[in-house]
Image 1 (cartoon, rainbow, N blue to C red):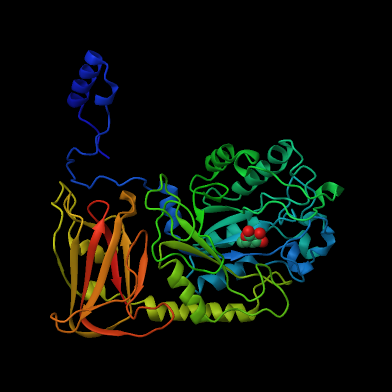
Image 2: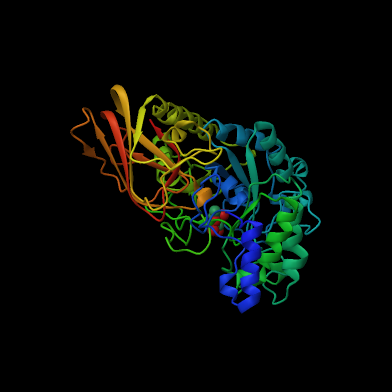
Length: 497
Ligand code: FUL
């Protein structure tokens, strides 16, 4: 964004005072050239915390709590605290270590589900771990041990705290007591477990059959979550403590992708709602896909088994590879640890990720491009920027050019499987369509059959045309043609595997 020079601002000010025409007065003009010649942003653009959140890409969900011991998915809130009886002290370090092996960069721990039982000693309710007579429960403080382990392992972390609370006498009682006495203070307690949290997860579920509600055993509901939970205040309060914490769902800073099956639309805008988003959305709200890695439910259930590494890799391609983040659920069992079968599949997934997406061939390719934007005073927009692994550099065309061709050429025919593209989303999501073609000789080209519309933060295209197979295309050249863009395209990374 460029600021007007003082002289220009003064001229505008005098014009403003002469004819009082407010329309002619503006302090920011994105059409004036800047010394760096940076392209003007295409709004909306992500906030700093939304950008950092997107970079987390692939992280785990851990559903653990009262339901682990009742074999339920939704408790009614009337559960006896003694039912929460871990056979060992719950071990978040083991959870995070296991998912790190699969290439995940962080995790979100459920610390209060809809049954209202809190997995930390809290001043807001007696329905918490300290009320269980089990010795391991008394040593349980999930937010604390989860945050400590995450920092030790160099991972990002956050908490799922259910707004809907079927234990609380106050929830849905027609007053603001629940929000002011229970929910907001709980979020504050959780924010204080670390000012470096990346996401707080607020589920949208509200209402259902009878809940305990302090003994009332009523079916209750609320009509508007945003006003009931006083969301603007909630957001500001949490951000004042943990400034980079994206408030998911009810918090409105990132969106649910619209299904729990682990896929996003091939066309997927970071604005709007659902699997596909909306090209014309007014504010930035990128998609997160929540998916189960196991067969039974979000919580652990006896007899369940994990999906195979190949199935999980396909989910990764259809979410992270389609401009969404992936939060993949692995439920700890009654011992408070992830079962050995889950740990094994996570290791297999890690090996598969390294084998399939670990060696980028793009830096070795000769690059040619139809146009490079004119240099700024200290920065350039050269095509080589897309392979330098520096997220602050990018390639762009000049203003007014919304189509472009990038060709990569290797010294010999290679087996190519995937192309990964990333827009420089600090300047907004811009590309509307592109094509990918490969060639062995530079004369005959074959178009990749995958749908190639939006890119966004990241798009991974399987060159064989389908996410379900792992088949190479033999090629010495690869051509990316951007066929439509909202403004000059800006790409910061292209990788080829
Ligand atoms: C849903 C909840 O109702 C489920 O129990 C689970 O926590 C899932 C991730 O979100 O809306």
